Image (cartoon, rainbow, N blue to C red; front, side, top):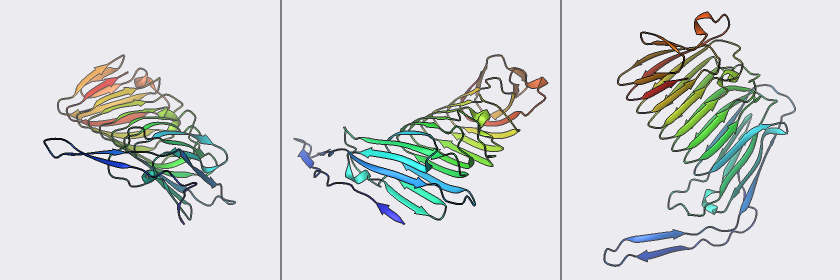
Length: 284
């Protein structure tokens, strides 16, 4: 089912073309209309047979996502520009919510606020594509089996504030010119992860409770990277060109760095193999 919802007529958007004197350049002013709301309500199925695929694609939006109890995906999107009206598509054990495909001048006073919750009762394979977003995600307690996340020029924070009750088989996270923070990673219940950073800033914080070994591949270009152990035993093996590594309390043996307590750890540990370019790496 492909659903495109409008709730009330929106005021006509004026596009004003001005000719700049002497050069013939054309300037465009795009106007917005009154605020409208798209309600999102995907209830739990009667029977939980398998994981659901939830795909969220945002553009220049302010995104706030929290754990929820009422359904697989619930919440609202408030917007004031008709071309970005989100499209909601549902299928058999799948939900796809994506911003309207608008290409053009972004209105100065654009309103595009996503306030959503992800359900805690059904295993989820989560796919996220973020554009120039300002986003805050709390995924604590959401049973995530697989995560595929790509971030453009965004400022995003992703937190696992509580344990993931589902073993996460794979985490793939790719960021471009973004400022991204992933926190509570010990709670994420990760088996394997592949994390790539472009020319932005990326923080990986492993606070929480680690319940199994995690193997992570970290690729960095011209990025600024920070790894915070937060008491979790971590080993980082660095392979890369002009990488600057700064440590706070970590021990070094060649290209291998151990967090405080890693050498004597008797429980699960995290191993990160970092292939870095012209990057800076800070270990805390």
